[in-house]
Length: 259
Picture (cartoon, rainbow, N blue to C red):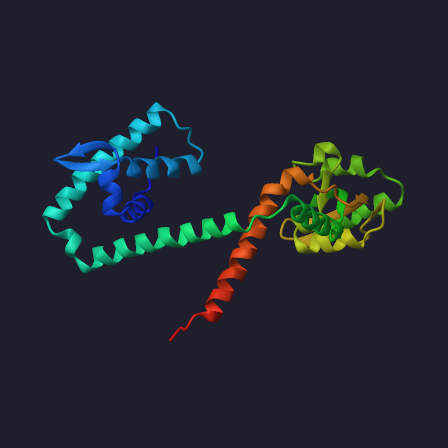
């Protein structure tokens, strides 16, 4: 279990003395009370990372807090808490939690409805213009070899048969088949040549890339099937929340007097 020291420190700094006094302790170290709010903060942090709340997690949190209190007491005895650089870091940690809590509360107060998410999903699907291509290729080292292959194809040779001489070991046994893919997944010269081909046509000139010389066949093209709404709902929500946070922050900065 990985327990984040900085985020825990910041959470602990936000707990008031009155709250600590009223809180039920989870342990005492040399007479110093470790309140349950500290344990709750640490456990919540782990839950957000996917941990399950059980006795093992609670024990791990308690053990970690005890270890930290022992070290913190030793640090205070040496006066480290009075050092300017330490005080600055503690204040930054406190500020970090305040900022995070403000943003969390803003997100809770400004939920994005399923209707809004679905509208955004439909807009993105409508704007999908890229095609997928069913592609085959034959890769060789020399341009003359590629030109000879093109000549054979023009006189009726089968692409799949000639692909057996390809240097691309990943596709040669499959007749040069590269499957369905968007053009941008290929290197630029390959992609440019591919998108200019009509269905069922092959390049009449070798296409040079850093891998060698290609003869490319575009078997078919199609508009890709978009993922289902439910598959991307969480990702859409996160993105739209981030856009909202960015807009909110921009408005706050405009109103702030910064010198």
